[in-house]
Image 1 (cartoon, rainbow, N blue to C red):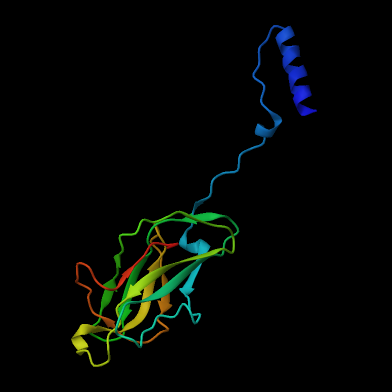
Image 2 (image 1 turned 60 degrees about the vertical axis):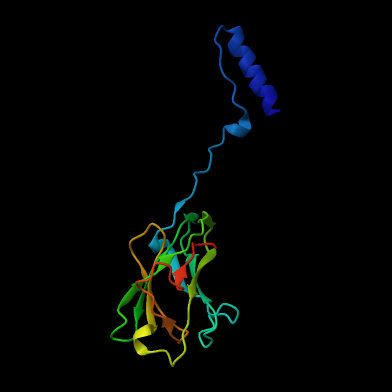
Length: 181
């Protein structure tokens, strides 16, 4: 019915000597704006603590992973793409702050509807309790900044254990992966 009305209206304009461009009724509706990036205020964050998400901090044979999630608490759809910024603050007076290196993985754009959650992983290289103290980093807090933001979340490290201190290494065994991977 709408296409007949459009054709009749176009014919009337041509007969009157004025040309017009017909726009299909389906295209006349306003296009929905693409979502913009998530801001820190749009999100909440935390460590994934489920049994299958817990890092194996009591083993020292291989790397393990911790996962940090971002959840969209806003009422709008937003996107996350890239790497979070992660600074670990140590529990020992000699630990200081360790800014984690990024993996070589390529980030993907994650679209978060209100209430949606995504995460990223941190590869960790745990060490034995017998490792010399100067070679251990004991995590206490993580300062986690969403991609392309400047405000961070402060998360308490809930898993215990110690990590091989490689804060000055070129290719450390402790590093982070992009959001969504």
